[in-house]
Length: 333
Image (cartoon, rainbow, N blue to C red; front, side):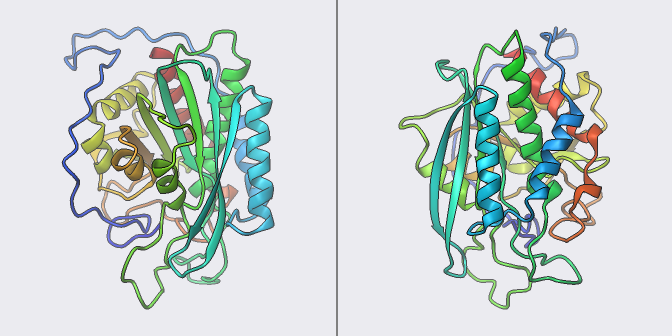
């Protein structure tokens, strides 16, 4: 994704279509301070296991569409979902990049409790950037994407493992969606910056062609760049517009679980990320948990789209904070 003012280098959104604000009911009840929330007991999230899942992705190398590393990692992700009891659908994504390159991608969907009518989406992109356009060296080489790509996938694979092995499971159905071809956008160093920058192709394809005809979900939560040390998850703008109650639900849950230092009560910029197309096209309210700079000096974490986005950026406490928060949200439904 790109950083044309405010996006990974993600496109800034000029205007939203007039979609009615989503009005779901929070388990926490009203927003006043007198409401007492009793969290449902949850199974243990293992940060070491989540970290290992990130490491295993990085060990394949950059996961760029049309490469062997990409294909091998996709097979690994699907096999792990199946191993933990999820029903897996692999959706081919044949799309054209900003420069005319034909990309052979694949969205990977793992469904837990597929019979449940009330469903929640947990999502992340599993591909990595084809160029290091924010680096000072080797700009034309792909990056490892430990945080940008790997961290969200690692957390969600661990959630699949935890829920799959738990005696008590959530009452709702959970669809873990790994979107492909999210980060194959036009480089910042390209002379021609006109037209569509070409990000989020897998999620746009899924929103237009869901893996199940007529598919719908209560809401969704997207993870992007969630594993670096001392992350600051601001309340991203598209999330606030389309799903403000889900933003409040997640941020309040994080605070109760002791992770308020990560989930900051501060509004962030509007970003073009995978959740935008899920909101606009699929009409499913989805929020984005993404590491943003509260100072405004930059948009994303300092190693974004550079070769320094390797395992040295990954912090187990950050993985735990996001994983525990998501588990609690699911089990409270």
